[in-house]
Image (cartoon, rainbow, N blue to C red; front, side, top):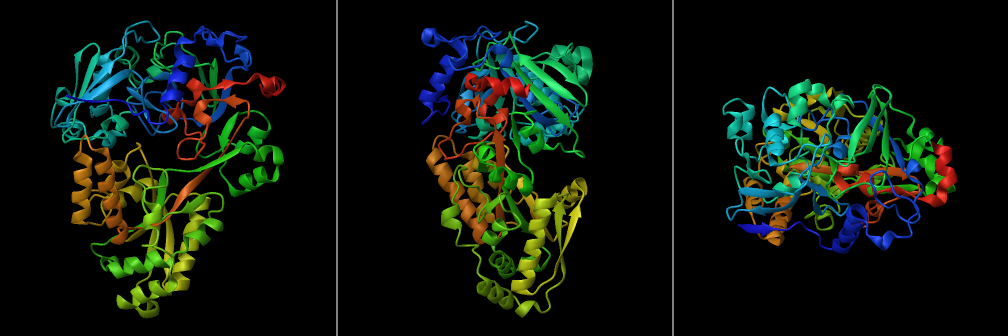
Length: 572
């Protein structure tokens, strides 16, 4: 077998230091004033243990089990009460979690994960490879009704098992022994370890005894992660407490994490809560909030922003509509002034996009591809005329569908509508459609024109570019693109060549105007200066961000600094 080690390039020293601080805590920290409830010496500048508390908002969802539901899970709490095989740091390097190492077979289809010794659930029972087998089978079982199963389709027989064509035992997961978990894929999948950051294990004993509600009450909840459920007051808050039974590599400094919950229809006043010291960190959701922060010298110093790994784009029916003609698609791509869009309707919330892969994402080629779909009104009008619609004459009135979008994207869509009218003299009407009806129509290729976003699921180009394969949700097909992505998806052992193939495929996508790429969302966040963590530092891509604990293990590496002691007390 070929052994693939976790990737630590540029972060090896930081990771080793984190391991020292978070697990063994030797006498290097001899000048610590405090030791937390797990027996971990706190850093010398840390506040006392009773003030090692983090408070945030989260959506009020009904479950805290990943393999029961993704879309209705209490996130990000679920990422702290359950241990995945692999976690990710803020450089997006893979970190061993329950699995201390992993190997792949020569054909690239069988991955073997070695579970670290000594892991236990919070009730003291061993955590082992059989628990991971149970968890994946639970998600594939059609009786579970899991809503994120498509994500795991590379696993052998996932589709057949979830469609009841094969038994659960046929799923490509098995335990060779208590400490060896194996995953087999239908085809070579070099990206599988990145995909399996979403492997938050479920406890069979608790589910058998209490059913799906096991995760919703402290008295029935069983934790495998760094924290455990201490309180869940419905409609009010979720409280996590550090887990004394946790033996993994990410033992936390924090004593508690508190989530104030809210419902979708009634979003909380996040900035007012932050200014009132009710919470320690939040995303800003409106241009007015960002403007308010920029206007305040103290708040401005607490503002961080970054480009999200998400792309808004236009996709068109290239099979049956006017968009069969590539020149029409080119006309649309050259008629949209992305800089103007991001400086007005999307001010503070967007950066121009000229391709699918955002800046900083593996294989991204924005700068090299930017000229292909550049804003060029004269060229846009010429392409439309060449397609038989000079100055828009004879061009049909179109509807541009949106997927239940909020104020900022709707405003951007209206700006695009105006640009198409001004540059091409064509009329586009906007319809904001309920999400399920929209997705049903998109997946069955019944939408002529739509503006839609897609956010990455795992940190690999196979995720964002695989979306454009001809068997997917877009009414666009390019055989050379399909072949190139398939080659990259199956290439084991030559990462440089794999990234080159993805770059080649993305160029084909942009040149053929499979989509018109518009913007990447800009995320604006504030967090307290007394929150200290290496995960909140600038990463190798030049970004600082708070992407929740699924991606950078913030709450397991974070502590509250003592120098702001009086401010901390005032905020509790």
